[in-house]
Amino acid sequence: MAVLCVDAGTTVVKAVLFDEEGRELRVARQATQVRRGAPGFSEQDMDGVWDAVVHTVRAVVDARLEPVRMLAFTGQGDGCWLVGPDGRPTGPAILWNDGRACDIIDRWEAGGVLDAAFKINGNYGFAGTSGAILAWLRAHDRARLDASHQALYCGGWLFLRLTGEYAAEESDAASPFLDIRTRAYAPEILDLLGMPWAERLLPGVRGDGDRIGQLRPLAATELRLPAGLPVVMAPFDIPATALGIGAVTPGQACTILGTTLSTATPVTVVDTSGPPAGMTLPSGVPGGYLRSLATMAGIEAVGWGMKLIGLDKPDGISDLAHTADAGADGLFFLPYLSPAGERAPFRDTRARGSLSGLTFEHTRAHIARAMLEGMSYVVRECLEFSGVRATELRITGGGANSEFWCRLLADVTGVPTMRSADSELGAKGAYIAALVASGAEPSARAAAERHVRPRDVFEPDEKRSALYDELYADFLAVRDGTRDQWERLAVSRARPRPADETGSRRSSA
Image (cartoon, rainbow, N blue to C red; front, side, top):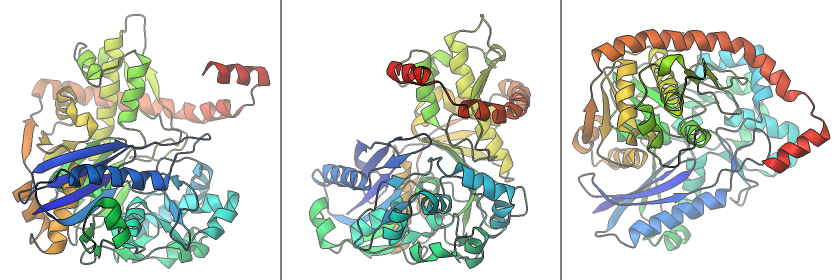
C-alpha cells in the first residue's frame, strides 16, 4: 500500500505517492502566488493554498497504482494564518518573509526582549514570526484580530481542512511562544512580549506521539480519498526536509537551497547560552532537536540575478558561473535581498544586498560566479555558527539541481556534500514521520537508513578549499565594512520623493 505525502511550500505545493520502500511512484506540483501588495508585505490566499493541495493530491490519486494507507503533510513555517470561529480565514495568510513588523522587532531587540526570549525558546525573533505579526495586527488591524479565533500556521491550516481539528505542530509552535525544553507554551514569553492577550489565539500543541488525525468526509470527497484515512501532521518543512534527506544524527548537516537558504544540524541538547540567532526546533526525531539557521533570501536571489544579467534557463547561471575562475576576480555578492533584511546567522532588518568590487573588466560570468559564491559563504557561516562540527552536508531544494553549486558548496565549506535520489525531500520527511508515528518504523534513524538513498557525493577539492578559506574571510570583511552603510541606506529610502519622480518610476515599472 502507498503513503500519500504533501509539501505545501511557499511558492509550490507538491504531492508525492510513495510505495512501501519509500520510492516515489508519482509526483504532482502546483505553483502558488505570493502577493506583495504593499512595501514589506508578503501574503498568500489561504483557500488558494488548499486548492493547490486538492489539485496535486487528485493528480496523484487518480493515477495511483495501489491503495493509499496514510496521508502525511508538511508545509512552510512561521507566518500567521488566522481563522475565525467558523474555521474560515479572516484574511490572507501573512507569510514568514513578511516585513511589516520590522519596527516591532527592532523595538523588542533594543529592549533586550528578544535576547531574554531566546534563553527560553532557543529562537531569535524576526518580523515573520507569528508574535511580531500579531503585535502588528493589534496596532494596525484590530478588527481582523478581534474577528480571529486561532492563529494557525500553514500546517495547522491544512490539518484543520483535513481533519476539522485546530492544532499547531510543535516545530511550528516553537517560535516564538514555546518553552523549547518542555515543548509547552511559556506564559513568561507572552509577558516579555507584552502579549498576554494573544494566549486565546494559540492552538493546542501536537508532536511526538500525537500526530495522527482522521480525514473528515468533506475533505475526503474533495481529495477523492476514503473518509477516516489516517492523517499525519509532520514537522514543518525545514525539519521535515532534514528527516527526508536523512540528517537525523549530529554531524549530518542539511542545507535547503530553496526559497530560504536553510542550514540545519541535529542536536540532542538545547543550548541557549551562545549568541542568540536562528531557530532551535523539535526535529521530528523523538526527543531530538534541530539547530536551524534560515536566511531571508534563497534561490529567489538566483532568479533575480538571472534577470539582471539576461538569463532565461534555470541552469544558465551555473553554466555561466563555471566559466569564471574561483573568486570572480575580486567580485563579492552580499545576498541580503529580502525587504525584511536578514535573520540568520545575524538579524538586521536593515540588511541589504550589494555587488562589491565591480570594474569594467568584470563580465556576466563574474557576476554569476560571485552570486553563487556569496550564497555559499552564507551557508558556511551558518554551519560554523551552529557550533556543531559537520562531517557531511546533505543538499536539497531547487538549487541542488545544479551540480556546479553542489561542488562549489563542498569546496567553500570543506565538507563533502550529498544529494538524495528523491526529488521531493520535504514530502519524504513527512513520509518518514508518518512511518514512525504509525509504528511502521521503530525510529527516525532506522527509517532514514532504510528509505533514504544517496544520488551522488561531492568531495571538496583541497586546493580550491584552501583558496576559499581566504576568500570567505574576505567576504566577511567586505560584509562587515558594508553593514555600517545599511542605516544610511534605510534613511535614504525613507526620504520623501517629489510626486512627479514617484509617478515616473511607477509608470516605467
